[in-house]
Length: 352
Image 1 (cartoon, rainbow, N blue to C red):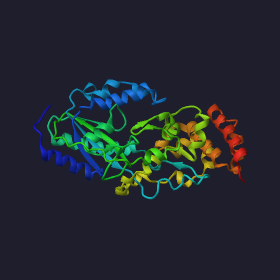
Image 2 (image 1 turned 60 degrees about the vertical axis):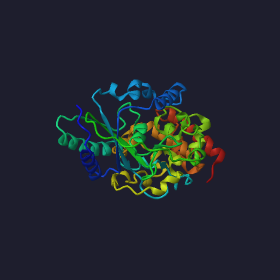
Image 3 (image 1 turned 180 degrees about the vertical axis):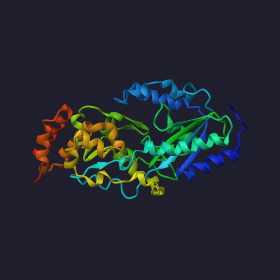
Image 4 (image 1 turned 90 degrees about the vertical axis):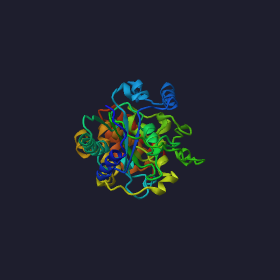
């Protein structure tokens, strides 16, 4: 259904979004820039997506959201600030301590953000007769970063993430598709200029060029999406990063506008309370219990312990030796491989 664009409706939806605690909102149409889709296909064709095979599923939907839902007329894009304050890179040189990307230092954002979007969606249905809505938080093949730029939320920086003049780059994105035709916002322009800090700071040199990432070398990909052993030449560059990486985000100058999130569930500091030895000794039941509300739970105990063992190997600390010997007898062969690698690294670089 189509109704005449109604500015007051747009304002009412925005008011509801802000009442739910969402940081920003923008409106756009479901038309994707052909150049953006071409760049995405190039990323896939060159194999830069690694084991993220799902990115190639229903690829036509990414090019044209109307193939996914033919009645969509407007895409409403929401930004959720998750910055917890302080220096996100404060722990990367404390080798005996686990470092987790700040987005995963609290409860799973999928659940928190989706609940807020559903509350907004229910109000939209009440505001407009015969309106329909669909809510998405990383659950469909949609090029949300491109639609975020079209909706004026921010722009896709050289590190390929969305950043905002209002919020820096500590933001989650969520979308509501609706069959209502609403006045759209002006797109945001690129404000990166000549800055290349995000490219230069990457520990694994994962950026092929500005705006082009080889995910197979990205620490976030390696510690979250990659299954099996990580290439030996990359392991030492992981440092103590056991889940995700914030380096390219943290050095962005636009973070001077970042504000601490009002959502307390994004910062329960769960992992901050545990050391590498405790994390390495988790069995499957303990892992699932500890991370039941966390996005970390998605990778499972085996992949998580693999990451912890790489961090232990990079610590060079002999105090972990007994734990490593124990895990050479683990049922998971990737963990066994990681334990033996860590033992060799500690013997080579170890300190008492």
